[in-house]
Length: 220
Image (cartoon, rainbow, N blue to C red; front, top):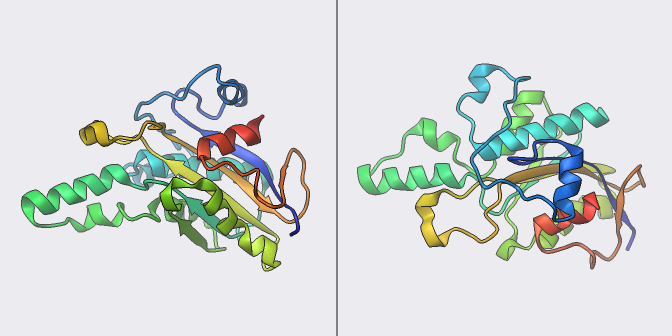
């Protein structure tokens, strides 16, 4: 099996923002991600566009924006979006409306679907390469990463933008909220060619199951 490489990481989380030094401290277990509903401001987008976006979508848009700014990667590059929970707060609102009012408002539903974060980013930045979305079975990030890397291994793509994001699970879920209830997002490039500051994967045995452990591996 040939190697694939992951590089050009950008990340955002409450309390850390996009500060590289803070992310290094987090990766070394010095400081935590804040468990709050803070989101990036997205000043570079139209106010009407960003007004109704959720925490997960704002984080996704932001890390993709930073990746594009830092690498000037082609707008035709394909994207793969991975999330364990997606638009969980909006989905709760939709379910609540169904139970209490027996109806769904179209405006709310349109922003609650699983692909909302990545599709919003493609609209914001005019990305034309298309995207795939992956829900990792049993939360195993390593399986989702293998799926994302498949076109690279098959030789049909030279590079792919990988994006991961999950938002804070609302308090209304009570004891059903996961122990790893940390809102964060990151993006990077999976490629067939070795790049600066990249991590190499060959048999994928060194890809962690947890997205947080994967991010720590990359940042360290």
